Length: 93
Length: 486
Image (cartoon, rainbow over all chains, first blue to last red; front, side, top):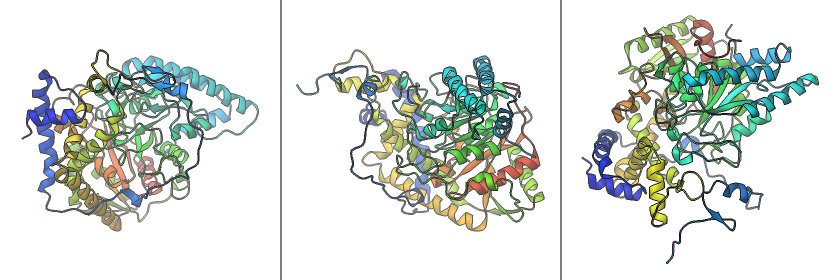
């Protein structure tokens, strides 16, 4: 059984608010989903080490400067920007 | 002989029976008319379509050769980035997001003068099986608009099944191309992981996501797959197509091909769906293929493994939505942290929030080994089980979905019951295999039944060949009443 407190803790880690009105039905749904996910722990098969799909390995490109996207175009998607940067409220006091 | 719509329209353009602009306008008109009922498009791009069509007409007028996909009206799912065209993932959090670059698949098709009619509806961030988690409301099934089109690429399937686009590109993380194709009575191909570039596809679960075509025939699926399966240095998991274009072997004889049926795929499947799969097996026998029955016990872990891994990856991928750089931003907040939390809580829909929470749960200290690590190990078991299966058969035949399209609004009641609709499609994503869904019959209400052919990694040619032979012999495709009649 997953508790309301656990859901609240997970919500903080996920950077989500869960309101008083939502918490009961959300806990009920999450309990069902986690019980379903838990069925893998009935598996007698210990499994096989899995690294990645189709034996892929990391691909690194040469460390060479290449043209990037236009700053103005990128900033056009931000709700607030100033001096060519994204704008947020003060983080340091 | 089963023929594709793309080749037919291409022939008409080359023979000047219709101009490219007339063709584009016909699809735009039909889309504007029928989208009111189908809700397949969330953004329409008639100006872009007509400009491209004009360029193609000029080439034809100059006597230049045009490629197979040139001038053909098509769509992109709204999680495929399009430079200068809104790309929302059907979420409030990306309601006004305009990408500054193109996804590689769109770069490829744009070069080939594909005529983009619009961006199609989908479950929010591709999380859902009915298209109903879309902030724009669900796309409707062209065979009965009281039923869902399926999901998550429901808009693409509704547009192609409703004949207001010739083909669409969708994405498939746990069945999101094949399931709506199955529900709408058309063809959906999920390529091998790595065969098609994911660059510019807005991520849900990166180790499972794959872009692929949704079409009305197997030949069209092969043509689009050949066009988009290029190696791309911008996607570190890209490998491109292995081997020659699949169109060349599409119509090969399949005498002696071994078609496997795993008993587990038929467990819990509705009786009429099961019967359609058995009938399809009979068609294969009549074509000279051999049917091999076998057990695939690892399949019983597939669905919980899928939900654990997909949600874990989603919780990480969706961490980027903070309201700072793009998309929706909450108002009235105390500090940055409060702003991020309010943005995410108001910007994401319920299903997305649920999956982020589950993903965070299975990755958190104390639960990681019991859920995420265990699921990864069982993923290894499933990969190996499929490897062994392909030692005894060439392709696997299975249902696409255990049932047919259900009525609108029914998916939201029980979360686990809804997840069960994905039971036949998720194993393919877990193992990174190619899978195709095509129509194999209709239920007593006239709703399409889909069958799935699954191949070994990079065996797209084999599954498309088997699919084309079935389509040609069984001839079950029924067009819907909507859209363009050409």
